[in-house]
Image 1: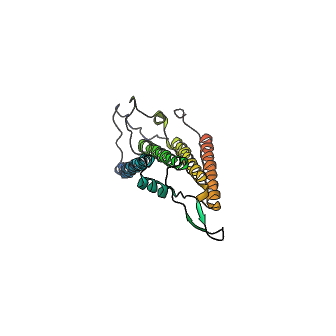
Image 2 (image 1 turned 90 degrees about the vertical axis):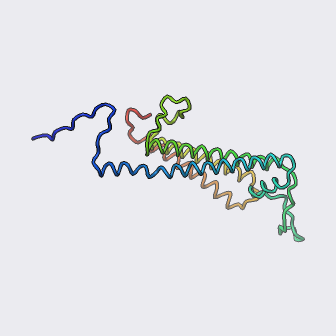
Image 3 (image 1 turned 60 degrees about the horizontal axis):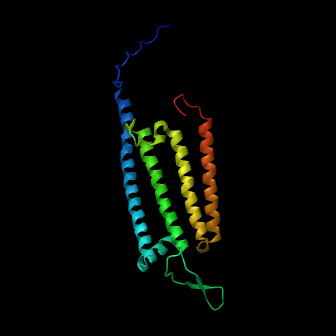
Length: 218
């Protein structure tokens, strides 16, 4: 049986010439570029939000009542409940006039939450662009992320799942600290959702371990 003639080897450093349809399909990966640029803009919004909250915290620490009210409203925090004549109906809440340790803790956890979401955005932007769009050419750069040298779709999914668990943990801790201002069903559902995130991450990690890997993947 006659074998089809083999393609001549490509010169070193020269990309193979693709058919027109294959080139079009392969070039369609650049349609993702606006998505990653949009995520960069979203991260800029998070940076702005971080500094707004931090400035309000510093101002409230020096007695600025407007900054304190802004923090309390953003946190959904309430003062001691004021009950009506029947002793059961809540008719209002005592105004918060000073920065408490609980409010500071909730604000700091919110700032940590913003940082973790920003880290998640960095992983998606850099890892996703490197994996699905084009090489960044960071080999040998002193600031190259350690995980980027062996990133692929599976590694990226595991890292994203781990980051989401961390973010969910911060949200759950904020809820428990401020539990008096939440209904019981909210506390239960947030705990159930966090546990679901944990099992999802374990399932993704287990599936990644079961999948065959090439010799270059670790």
